[in-house]
Length: 438
Image (cartoon, rainbow, N blue to C red; front, side, top):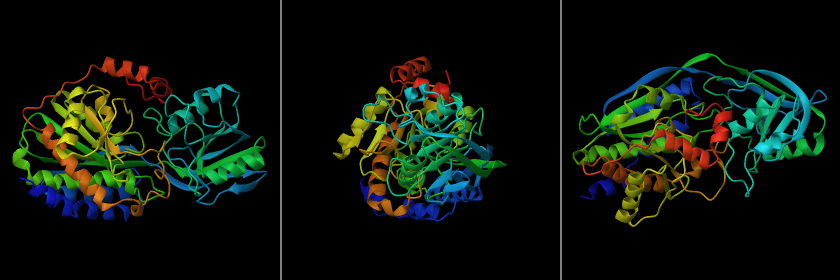
């Protein structure tokens, strides 16, 4: 009965795929590298024994970077790759204005006059903040208040400029030039040039492109199904090992274990590795638009998990998902973290916002923000095969549990989801970024 545990803990299938994914130079949405990653993942799912492994393609707004810099008095003061990079979906062009420091970029920090100015904000929030303010929310505050350009300063030391998309579903390309700068470069810019006129220059292209979702299935051919998902795309500046090569490697490892336990599945399991997550949850939104939400029993979405040994299962106030997580921890006498709060990011969200039961699966960390994520330092050396294998064992057991005929899940009313977002003070940011679906 426990043979599958030993086989999973000694398997190399997931880690082998992870090594293949991080060896691709660029997995940016719509790039040839993302296409290669989708093909590798599809093939790995087929090799695991999943049936009908395929890629379902869709159109996406492409974006490719050139050189970017910040200049003062015509002299480039931040232009090296380790100092300054364009934020994906920034528009091409230059903008100039007085360089001002808006600190953490909280909503109240934008109450001062920023019209025509180059605003710099931190990538984190202070301890006293009620909630985490996402990069895109800070960017949209800058656009809404008439800023000329946006400079996103990393709070993590090490000459690591942060990246991250600034577009929206309605307007894939943002309104003002946007760059990320390292903590050290940001400190130097403010020390030497705050209050002076600065120019932010972004060189990029935004061609039409194609992305896709790698899809396969295991278990009986039931109408009802459980989704096990991840995303294969990554930002073009790094290996994307943690975010989210790790998640994709994990679902492939789980697929191998589930294939060995297929007789234990009472419900079909649909395996999906999404494309274009990093530029607005595009792949999962395409899938959510196509799917019959009433047929989805539960979603187990894995995103940025292996860097922390303890698995975190955010269950979005679905009672049966919390109960399943508790059963998992008891079954293995193993710590499993989790929270009831809504996580309106990653590929579970296009479903959960409509009331579909879903987990956001990640790795527990004490750090606020992404840490090494979305920087050049998201590399394979920071991950351990042990963590991937342990988490794959736990998630295999969780999926088998959820797929059991004696387990039922109930959807939530979308109005209750909306009310919870309001209560958790997350609605304001989603409304300004155009992500409010209610």
